Image 1 (cartoon, rainbow, N blue to C red):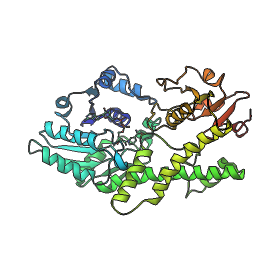
Image 2 (image 1 turned 120 degrees about the vertical axis):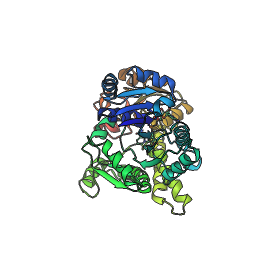
Image 3 (image 1 turned 45 degrees about the vertical axis):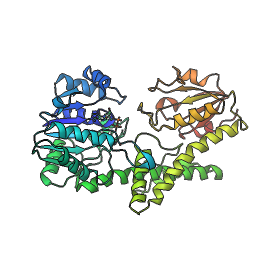
Image 4 (image 1 turned 180 degrees about the vertical axis):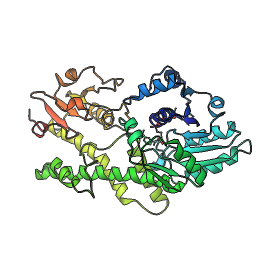
Length: 408
Ligand code: NAD
């Protein structure tokens, strides 16, 4: 089918490349010209393993193209995916201004029937609102059907997850529209769950919030384990062996970051408050997550007797998790800001993120002539870290236990 994807970020770009790979004719539209110029040359603006190759293969096959021209993007589209950002706004609600602009763009150009698919994570009821907005702004008698198809990919494993995901959720009000969208993914061996639109929207938020709860839960258990001289990793393994619980997302550390969990937990908590059905567990999860990075910082401060003035800190990892260059809501940013505010200097090494002023070129340089090392992102290359006589604060519980709190 002829498909247009609006937004070439982590989700839109992967969606476009995978759909092209599945045999569709895909046009990706963005308002960011430098990004589109790069993509036209086959250069991915984001770090995502395997994505460059997939983009290049499909550019050569001419099944994938990039543009900033709405007319060009929409003129023959049978299906339009919206994959623009939905950042956090005041009081935690999702900011739908990018979605609104994309919807108005569609209405102002399209004069044929089209199915709009919402890939962006949006609050429950957004599909209804998009439908109304399209009808309000449309310039012809075109029929618009809005389908919810939330995205569950993990950055760093985006292609793997697209081809081997646990489920594809399709929420449609009209069966034909749901069938059409389901057929787009026929080449994938991923189970499909069909629901109505509002359920699909809720499945995304409820899933992300649940995963965040799991992370904050094990983090608080880890804090207690530390006081009681218990190895939390053994506890996580023991808990995770129970199939009702599962081992994934029981990795303790300095808390979640990234472009999804922080804003999605805030957005669903906001909905809970707004509709008088408070999500007290999610609210507590958000607080516990903030506290986790503060506790980590406090350990560093305490180690230096409460004074970080002049201390040289080597930071390992900047991205909010390994295998991505995404810095959005990364704990590293909070730590750098606080460490510098208290008089410390920071040398940071990340295998992919290179543009911050604290960045240094090599792991060796980040770990030499420093007073302490903070392991902030669990990139594979840090796990065998060998340094002598330097205190390491392992914010991800990945180093061997005996190194974790090695004393000067
Ligand atoms: P992103 O910020 O990386 O990319 C958004 C892109 O949309 C940008 O390139 C921006 O220039 C473009 N854009 C904005 N308005 C536009 C318009 N009117 N027309 C054309 N392009 C426009 O965002 P992302 O991380 O890909 O996330 C997109 C959505 O997917 C969000 O709702 C997010 O919550 C959700 N999501 C993200 C992930 C993830 O891992 N990043 C996973 C699942 C769901």
